[in-house]
Length: 111
Length: 116
Image (cartoon, rainbow over all chains, first blue to last red; front, side):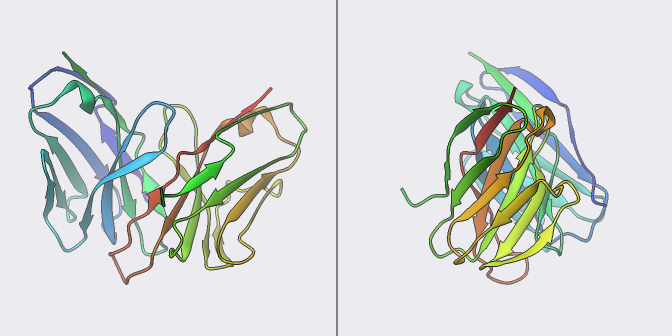
């Protein structure tokens, strides 16, 4: 059974600081890994998807890396802003199509 | 807006009542997923459909839960004889199968259920 862990569970940083969010998974037989953002009481917004054959993906201030052999992914958010405050979830897709999620990292960016 | 929509957004019910949620996926998407999320946790997979066929159900989906996607378009999730432990956010997602690894799941806003 795929287990996904996100550390830390919560993070508070001053505006402008770079954010580093970690995700680890136990089974390296994944199709892809997705990072999502969730605002309080809302659904999930997909941020980045990394294929199993890729090492990283970038979108604007966001960069995600994937090391499948060690079961790790890292999401970097450069020059954080108060609007980046949210919960960030990583999810791995295994061959039976469903996503296995971590519990998330709740980020607070202080103005 | 052509994203995934869910109805209702919030539902409060008394223990023992039945509830039904609806999900309308992105129109050309052939896969539809249901997840459940409790406070402080990530979503957990419940079930998924490929067109109208329900292909997998999690062991979390007790016999009080039933899901349908009758014409391969919208889906309903029904919970019979609700229990307080059913209180959660129910999320629907849809995707278009493009081949291994290419699939991105798009999520709706969720239905928040509170069982009193």
